[in-house]
Amino acid sequence: MCMVIFAPQNEEGNSDVRLLFAIFAFATCGGYSGGLRLSVDCVNKTDSDLSIDIAFAYPFRLHQVTFEVPTCEGKEREKLALTGDFSSSAEFFVTVAVFAFLYSLAATVVYIFFQNKYRENNRGPFIDFIVTVVFSFLWLVGSSAWAKGLSDVKVATDPKEVLLLMSACKQSSNKCMAVHSPVMSSLNTSVVFGFLNFILWAGNIWFVFKETGWHSSGQRYLPDPMEKHASSYNQGRYNQDSYGSGAGYSQQASLGLSSDEFGQQSSGPASFANPI
Image 1: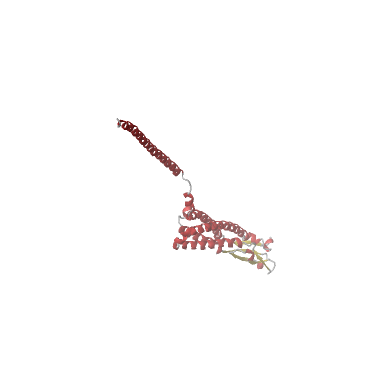
Image 2: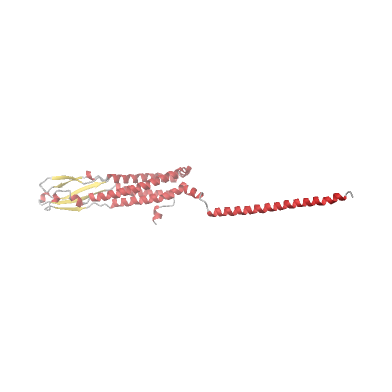
């Protein structure tokens, strides 16, 4: 069933599926925005803050996400920031997805409207094969890097880890707790679609390879044992026929010579009888 979904048997079907999967990949990652909510209940209730909202989004430069929390020492508040910068893996993943989307879109147009140009001089299938191999590698690298980056994002935005940054929460007399944790379902989906794109592009390498003609040309020059056997058999029959015809010709020639000799021998007595 997976091969039916991921590897259609024609160029247009392959391109359409790649187009759709690329959209899902960069939309679920590049369009993400989430947040968490914390509460700090100080001994002095007037210093408490029970609704501390921390919002973050793509490209996950968390060290630039700042927020203020109470110190539980009067009205003073401290300014903190989340830890980590995971923009490189996220941006690389989205960039691969966007370029894969653009290439799939262009390939769909070429397959539909410029099929003759695509197959001219085998240049189109050759370029398509090279690009497919490159994108397969990029999807694997980008998805793996983003999976590791997402794991680090989850740790950096874990409410328990964020509470450890607050000085007020280091005092046992104050009560700190997480009110709302970030929802990461769409980011998990982006990782899944990233690896699905890798499987799709890698599986499509074989179909594009067959379009280049290298597969058929390679089979054309492979020796066929049946053809070789048939060739040797025909050659044997030809030699036998040639031998038979040659033998018959030689036999006729030898018979002809014998008749001549016989004629010469019979003419001898005739010439001898004339004088008599």
